[in-house]
Amino acid sequence: MCMFISNKNKAFTLIELLVVIAIISILMAIVITNLTQAKAKSRDAKRVSDIAQLQLALEIFFDRCNRYPAIETINGADVPNINDSCTAGTGTVKLVDFISRIPTPPIAGDYKYGVNANPADYVLRAKFENYNASLLEDDLDGSIYGVDCSDSVSATVQNYCVGPK
Image: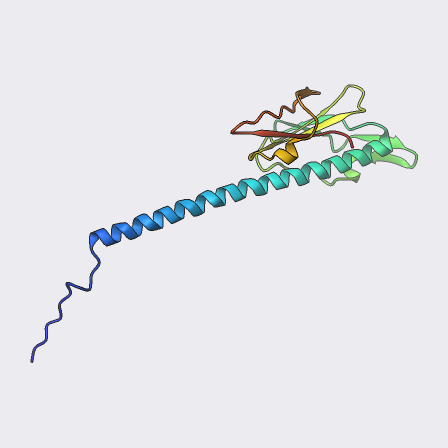
């Protein structure tokens, strides 16, 4: 007895394959979009942390030297000069004594440092990728010591500025 097995019912049709591919494509688009937003938020969190570390180091330097460090341009970004020093009661004090290196921004040019001519005041700025109303209420607006601290809501970049505590 010869048995013939029909393969007709065991294969997927072209329409079924296209539907499955379309569903997988839609799911991948959703996942990639959420992943991109999560990465941008994590970069913004790094910026806040970096600015806080710099701010603490600048305040300690000011406490010892009664001034803020000068500006140094590294890779097109104005940052505090890590080798700036002063003579304090116990010897030479450098900014590098309080922070081992100037933090590197996630995207080049995100950080900017400005100091006034008398070095008794400064401003640090980070550019955010996502709008965050609570962090942008920093009471600094406009151009301060050559640093743009405008808080206008923009689809591309938000400025977060801090000054002395």
